[in-house]
Length: 284
Ligand SMILES: NC(=O)c1ccc[n+]([C@@H]2O[C@H](COP(=O)([O-])OP(=O)(O)OC[C@H]3O[C@@H](n4cnc5c(N)ncnc54)[C@H](O)[C@@H]3O)[C@@H](O)[C@H]2O)c1
Image (cartoon, rainbow, N blue to C red; front, side, top):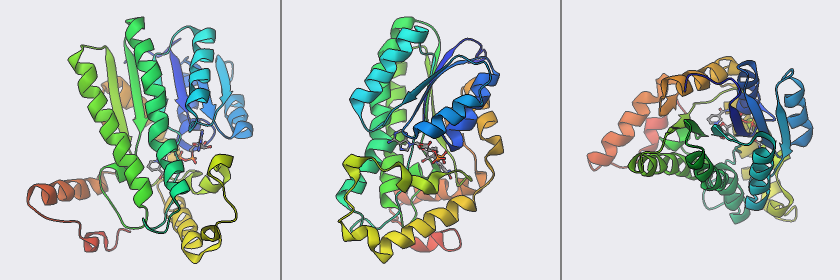
């Protein structure tokens, strides 16, 4: 996709971090924007930075299929088309597999993976019907290509996002669809991702569960804050996204220092190896 002017972008997670800078670059390129996020005040702040771009502010909890469907319907009513779908909304929940409450597993799988299912299930048929060139970019993570200790739920959700995007790309190719697909797999970047707890919807809240006062929970919070605040600056993310859209790059990798880990994982798979936590020494 080379020309973005007057095209419509449907973007989840637009209130903070990657979503906000992607919205700003899209507006600069003359796109019309449907912006979704659970954090309504911050979503309005994003919209306020977009000058005179045509913007729909759609406060939405992306774990709710009906809410996403309503946002899609509103976008079609306002703009009449959707050319670029970016599934960026995401949360990070550290914690060991057996310690993290099931409600947290369900929460992260819904935000990071099921929301991408909900949007694509509805928007792909819209794009096919339009018969114009379209693009879908799912934000996964390097955590969707390699595993590390300490955050199995995040990995499960991001592996789901990668697999979902790859498998959808095959099916779209089979039917000759004019939709370019992308999966973004960044390493750590300085954003608000360690503020996940402030986006916890009521349906995934149970303050009476002692887990949320436990040392395991507090350590997980510190871990998330440490890795995100020590990530790389966000300044190149929007340019990277638009370059990938222009060049039709499927796997969008932002941290080449992790490429060796991807190769190492594949090597273990095909050579009868197994996960070895010592590979992570000095990394995590
Ligand atoms: N920052 C990193 O190091 C990093 C690395 C790899 C991948 N990612 C991924 O990038 C994406 C963007 O994250 P970010 O780093 O910009 O973090 P961020 O917290 O700054 O932005 C995430 C956005 O998602 C929104 N969100 C959370 N739950 C929601 C819900 N239920 N409904 C609607 N919106 C919701 C948040 O309000 C926030 O605006 C995520 O998918 C994240 O997993 C981030």
